[in-house]
Length: 356
Picture 1 (tube, one colour):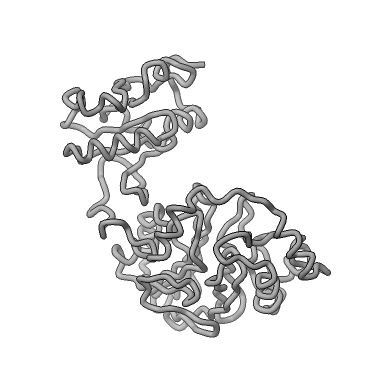
Picture 2: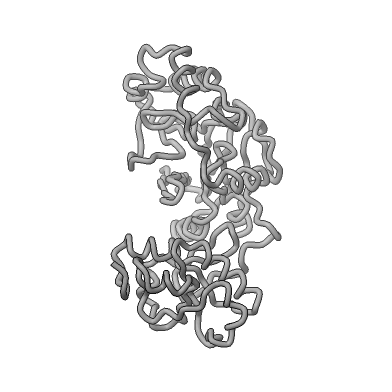
């Protein structure tokens, strides 16, 4: 029996897929996200699976892969396309390769066009295909950077994906509307870019005029993913903190979500590193927060408790992330950033004092 789970990272709208063989307990993880490694590792443990491989569909530009981090936690091996020209993988895949897990396997199909190293993983019985950013649900990946080529993508989809059985389910690396799955038949008939009677010239003309902004994480994600997500400095935290449910970022700091912070607010020292006019401004501030602007932080370390955990907050989470790094250097160990800052706090309807 196949064990299958579709997981989601809201920050990058990335799907991660877990495939397991229930008899042997061996498993694969496709397109893991760095910030979600602890979540994924916990699920693998709870399902009593042994992760054999992490597989990336390509060198992502919008998030950092969790491949290297997962290897540190589980001993799994890393595989991705030889065309990606990345370092740090145990296996570089080419068209026609098979990656086994127990008595099952996925077949590798080269589907360049979004990048040179894009591949699609097809389950052995052709019931599922994991298409990365090549074929999306009623759409396709972009082709305007990172070796993108709309004509190659058109050929990849038509020859390697649309040639699969009509009932084969398609699972992409991303969806931005909350849609989870499609099928070869659906996309053949209804994909406005690649289906029906659309020709290669039509597709190329459309893709060449999208004029999309580059992904926000491009400058961080691509260099990191060319090293399979290896964390700078060679480590990513020795153990998980026990004082709160935290998420570890590729930037090397722990973050806490607003709803989780509310549960522990009385047990931590909350430091607001904005300026005074912001603290008393439109966004207001969180009850119990201590105002210490970022520029004065080093001079006022004595005002921050070393006997309990510390959470930092600012408007968006950027300055407070800097504060976390500064406090770590000063010897603070139980410390986290409030994810998204006051903007996220207010957006999620959490209570604030002052403001409008």
